[in-house]
Image 1 (cartoon, helix red, strand yellow):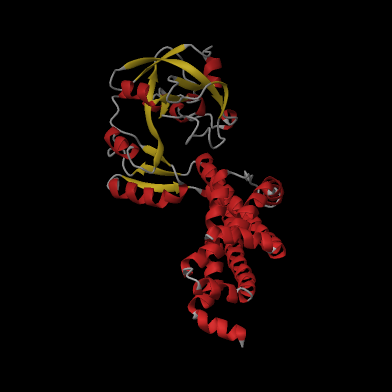
Image 2 (image 1 turned 120 degrees about the horizontal axis):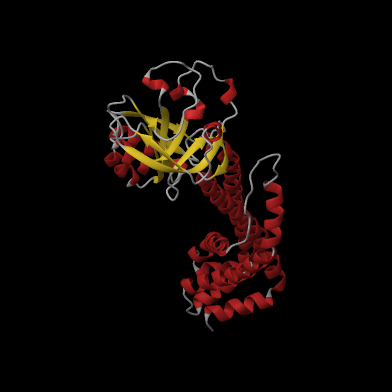
Length: 405
């Protein structure tokens, strides 16, 4: 009779032991599944938070004459850790077909110019992202949207609206006609000093895309570059690489405070879940080993007889392992049936907005079942080895003689 036939017959004959082992393994499997769902959910949430919080390294130049060049930007974009780059530049321009707003009588050039600020993406790394300015109509400058964004007071003073063209000139004599794609407001326009030169007034700040800026000024570089990191955990590595490459012209400032604040509760949950998983595996292995050890005492004679009639120790080991594995497989099915219920309970317990301020997607997924199966098999294997080792190491004749005595 093969080892698997013996295994099936033993489980059928010892129903009480089988049921007891099933419930023990069901509890252990459910706890392993629960903790693994928590660990996976926290890992997924942490990755999502990393994308939303946009951790970055901002490189600011030391001197105006030593800017970050387009070649430098291309090198940065090719770094493995970089997800996006937002380049910033600043210059002064002359109005051609519109009037500035100024309260100064100065004849200086600074009172005849607008401040032109260029961005790859205006929504980030600007006064708009910091809440200083707000877009009241139109769209932000981005990779897909080219043009300019002007102040509402400047638009009203010149009767300008979205879609109109305004012309700007640079000190080198170049001119450019640019479409108004957005209009913004600060709320601090009326609080500025009356004698301020035009270039320093909020109303005369004009935001422009980098391509148009480059055409107007024959761009030689950027004053600031915001480098976004794919994984906030690699932010220090990215900062080190940027500092090494741009050490002669710029210094780095990291920005991941929001990520750290949001990730802290997840890290605490992860530590607790890992501790629970370790304790579950330890306790489960111990309890199952003790059960099997107690039952193996009553099977010493059976094992000795099987060895005496020619059965190999490997065959006996496979029989006992298959018995425990079949019960464990049923326990896995049972814990999976309870998985959705446990997921709902855990989601409500862990995503209390008053305590964590986060939302975890605690759901039963196939990868959770795979992890449960892998850890469970290791647990069962360890328990079977512990329970069988004393019997397999003992001489069968010695075992039988003790039984007869």
